[in-house]
Image (cartoon, rainbow over all chains, first blue to last red; front, side, top):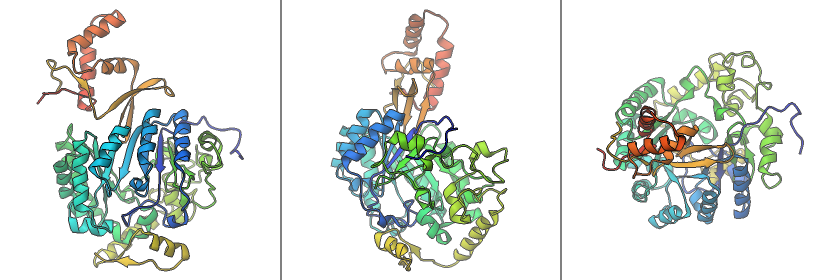
Length: 385
Length: 92
C-alpha cells in the first residue's frame, strides 16, 4: 500500500470504532447521516469480517464500539457480534431506532454482554414522529424505551433537532424524564448527507435555536445528577467551526457496511479520497499508513486562513465534508467560521431556509427508491406532513 | 452529597476496566471514557457496596503504609458521586 510520506506524525489510537453494520433501515428519516447514494453499496461484510475488524481495532487500542447502521437490528448476527465484542473488552453501544426490538431480543443482547442502548425518537408528538420516521413507530419506540430500563441498561434517548420539532423542546425534555432516560442527546442536525438535501426544510431560525437552547439549559441545571444532557450545538449559528471528529484520524474509525474504512462517517462524500477497504488491508495498515487517514492529519494540508490561524489546534479547520459540500474544496476552511471567505454561503443557506419556513415544504425521505433516483440524477419523491 | 454512613458502590451503569493499550484504568459509559490516575482507580476498586468510607480509607492506608488519607479519599468520592460513577443504595 502507498504511504503518505516518511515524516509521519506520531499517530494516536482509534479509541472509537463505529461499525455501520448495514445501510438497510425500516425508517426513512430525512436527516439521515448515511450517504444519499447508499443504495450503491450492497455487498455487506460477513460476520467473520466484522469479528476480524473488532479484534484488530481492539489490539490497536479501540475501546468504545458503536454498532450502528442503517438499522443494526436487521443483522441476524448481532448477538454474535455483541458477544465477541464484549469478550474483547469493548464497551458496546447499540445505536438503534428501536424498530423491531422486542423484549426477547433486549434480554438476549443483555446476556451477550451489550452495555448500552441508544434509542432515537423523532418527536414527542406521535403524528410528527411517524411522519418523520416514514413509518408508524411511535408507540413501539416508547415501549422499547421502557423495556431498556427494565433490563438494567443505561438508556440514552437521542432526539435529532430541526425545524419540524424544535418548537417542542420542552415536551421532548418532559418525555425524556417520563421515560427515565439516563442520558439525553439533543442533537441539532448536522447538514450533511440527507440533511444537506433537505436543509431548506430542516434548518431552524436563530430565534428558534435561542429559545430551544434556553429551555435545554434550564432543564440541564434542573436535572443535574439525574439525567446527563448532551447538547450538540448548531454550527451554522456559531462563529467558529466544531472540532470535527476531534481531528481527522486521531480518535475515530468508521467502517461502512461494505468494509470501506472512513475517518468520519460522512467522508464517503469527499471525491478522490480513495478510502481503503478492510477486505484488502488490516486495520493497523489502514489507520497508520493509508493516504486517506493521513490526508488531513496535522496542519500541513491547510490553506489560509486556517494555516496561520492561532485557533487551528482547537478546531482543526472544522469539518472537511461541510467544507467540500458548500465550497467544492475539501481543503478550505469550514465555511461556518466567520474568518472563512465563504461564510456568506452559510448566511445564504440560513436566509434560504427562512424563506421556506413560511409555507409547508415537502421533504425528501431516505429510502432506496430516492437513493437510486439521486444516483441516476432524476428527481426523488417528496412528501408533505 | 456523599453520605459517609452508607457504603458506596461502583455504578452498574458504568464500567471500570484496565486498558492494556493505555496502561491505566478507565471508566466507560455511553458515549464516553474517563482515564483514571492510579490513586483514583485504587479508591474506585474498593467501592463494592460493602466497605464504608472509613473501611476504604483504612484499606488504602494499610496497602500504601501511610496515614491521613481521609480528606483526599472523601474529596475524590464526592467527585465520583457527582459524576454518578458511584452510588449509595438507600440514599435519598
